[in-house]
Structure formats: C-alpha cells, structure tokens
Length: 273
Image (tube, one colour):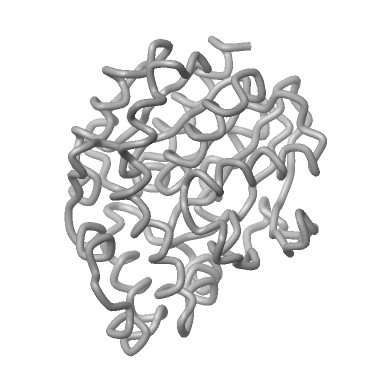
C-alpha cells in the first residue's frame, strides 16, 4: 500500500472509521474521501499537504473502509457526523478538504456549526438546484431499483469508474483498495447517499447564503459527471467563496491534476489561517 498513507481504525459514535494521519505543520486539516474511492485518493497530494499541515484523512461511514450506518447515508446526517469525527480526533478548528460526496455534507455541517471549521475546499459534488448531473451519477440518483447494481456488483462498477480517470493510473494496491471498499453489495448500498439529493439539496440551497466559513470550490474544467453549474451555483450563493476550475481536469481532478489541486488547497489554507 502507499508508503505515505497508513490506515488505522478508530471508533466514532459506535462505528469503526478508517483514517490515516501525517505531517506536523501548523495547520490542522481534515480530508474526507471521495466516492467511489477512499482515503488513498489523496496519495498523490499527501506529500505536499503534509508539508504544510497535520493532516487526518477519513473514510466517511458507508464509504471506503469505514462501517456503514443507514441513518447517516444522506448529506445532512453525514454533516453532523463529520463534526463528531473532528471532536473524536481533537481537531479544534480544522481546514476541511471534502470533494465529491463531502461537498454537500460539509456545507450542512458549516451551516449548523458556524465556527467549527477554519475553511472548506469542496467541489465535484452535486449541489445545484434544479439537480444537474451527468452520467453515471444521474442514473444512480434516479434509479428506481438498486437490484441491478447488486447484480453487477461493486467490483465491476468501480473498475468502470476508475477507467475514466484521465492521465493517471492508480497503483494496483490503491486500485485494489477502492474495489475492496465497494465490492459485493457495498456499492449499491452507498447509492442511498446520492438518492437523498432530490430532497436535501433544495434545503441546502436555502442555507448557503448564511454560511460564512471561507469556501473554495475546486472542479475540473472537463468534469462530465458533475457539470460546472454545480460549482458556479455554490459560488453565486456562498458569501465567502471562490470558484476555481482546473484546466483539463475531469471528475477525479485530485488525481488527474494533483499538483494543481494541492497548490489550490495549500493556497486556501494560507489565505484563511
């Protein structure tokens, strides 16, 4: 496995949660894994981020190597759990990096706990209302029945998703971790999270103008899964925000344009200390 990211487990609210930590810089940072990946999605940016900060990367419940609880499989409940994770880790006021499914969850958390986070770096996650998503995410959100995904199995679905990463090939070990994280029925079960978007994203939209935590929205300019309107929607409504499109990056921009992604994260930390 990665020489940099060494996973361990902790218990938070009765759930087994996988995490890894590194670095001893003056900044505290909490990194939340994207879907359908894991904390190893940060393998390429890990050396740069740990130069600047004490970094803790966490697989959210139901994602990566962490235990699932059905009640947490929606952004609002997950946002509350993110606060509990920060409490368990004794992170006083961390900078949070939460692409993809973490986007909506961390915004709910920042709304409910205005002074809990120093800053957020989010993006590549569904946010806009009306909901505007590309394939295959749109299909997953709208699926009337998850049985077809159970029949296909998580391994095949994750392999297809990973094959869309442009210009970067995860190592066999990291790829194997992604697949193991969603093998069997695990991927189908994780779809419940995004199927809550039609109910919860309109609620989140009403809260955005009241969120004053500094937010940087980072997205690949070529992301076909989560179209650009999701980023601009947030930028237009969050009063203390900046939107950045990484030229040529797709949906997995933290891997496809790792240097650019890490530079934007570190710059945001510097601006919001």
